[in-house]
Each structure stands twice: as C-alpha cells, then as structure tokens.
Amino acid sequence: MSEIQDNASQCIKNPLFKDYELTNDKAKITAEDLMPLYLQTYWANQRPIETVRKSLKNSLVYVVFYKGEPIAMLRLITDYATFAYLCDVLVDEKHRGKGISKWMLAEAFDHPDIKNLRRVCLMTQDAQGLYRQFGFKNIEFPDRYMEILRT
Picture 1 (cartoon, helix red, strand yellow):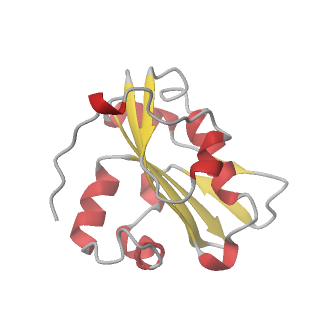
Picture 2: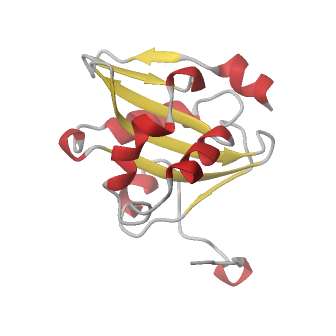
C-alpha cells in the first residue's frame, strides 16, 4: 500500500489560497502538529496522540499549511480499489469559511487511486450541505448499514 501513497504524494498550490499549501506527503505530516486541530472537534478532542499517530499512518491524509503551519486536514481510510471512508475533516477555527475544506475534498476525490472507487462513505452530524456538493447523499438502504460502536 505504501507504493500507492508514495507514488501519488504531492504538494499543491492554489492561486485562490495565497500562502496556503496542500499536501498528502506523509513526510511533512505529524500527529504532534495536527493535535491542535483535533482538540477543536467535538468528536475527537479526547483522542490520544498515539491513536492519532496510528490513524495517520494507516490512512490517506491531506493537510493544508498556512505559512508553514498546519491549519486543516482530511483523512480517508481506503483499500485504494473499491472503498473509502472519509473522516476527520478538520479546519482551524480561524481559517473556516474560506473554502479550504472544499479544496481538500476536491483534491482528495481527484486522487488517481480515489476518483474511481465504487463507494465512499462518511458520517457527519452537521455538515451534510458541504458533502452534498460533492455527490454524497443519505444512505439509500439504512437498514443494511450496521456498526460496532465502542466508547
């Protein structure tokens, strides 16, 4: 799997976002740098750093840097063949409302190993409007979805 991630690693500039850089290069991404973003969430603000470290290692991760500081991230759990689960879309409070999450989503969904996946799923409490812009819809057959939820 590392071959897929390494071959597709990239740093992306966008003229609409001066002083911002988006990357999925894991060499530039650390759990320590991303912890302040996790602390701003309602779902992961208690997540131990070792859990964050392990989740980053086993996912496709995009991070946006502003003047060298990480201010946003997106994480996809995937087999790179048929399925991905979108999770941990985080944008620092000071940088929200600028379209950064849309930029990350567009780049992630254009990734050569992601754009043709049969299914991408996510769960959200309050961002359905954002994700509908990228083709997400409510589960057609919710009675088929099952989970194990541990606290």
